[in-house]
Image: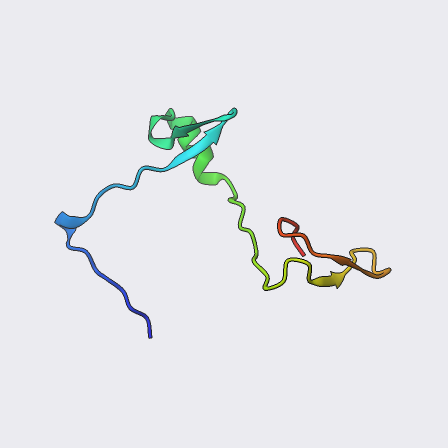
Length: 74
């Protein structure tokens, strides 16, 4: 069962999005038009979560298994 809440238009507010640029964080709304366009085209990283951080998986070279470490893409 999916439980959702609908807000009335007058209850909604703009969400401020920040991103890291050159080592510091900055709101995307402060970017110039070109940078904002570039930000929209970016591919965002999504980390997969496993039940066991050290889950065994096949090695890329097919020669055996190696441990799965959280940030690697299986």
